[in-house]
Length: 114
Image (tube, rainbow, N blue to C red; front, side):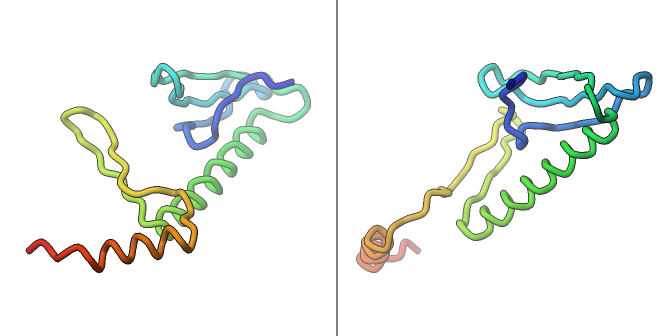
């Protein structure tokens, strides 16, 4: 059964517990409230260190795929320290050949603003 519905990309920190071999925890940002939450678990079969390592590997793979996708799609994100917010420019959505041709036609018709 599903215990927590959490996307791996929102995980900030994951580590095994120092006092209990089967325990591990991770910190993540909640998607709805935007609060940082610490989730702690006790493993049934494996050690907390092994499960923590698995979460870390999943996070690293997710981050690598996200960075590759951002590079290919031209998506950029900027951080505004005064408002502590990120602003994303671009889209991950894959455009069709027709949409791409229309966009290029519009760009050809638009004079350069210098």
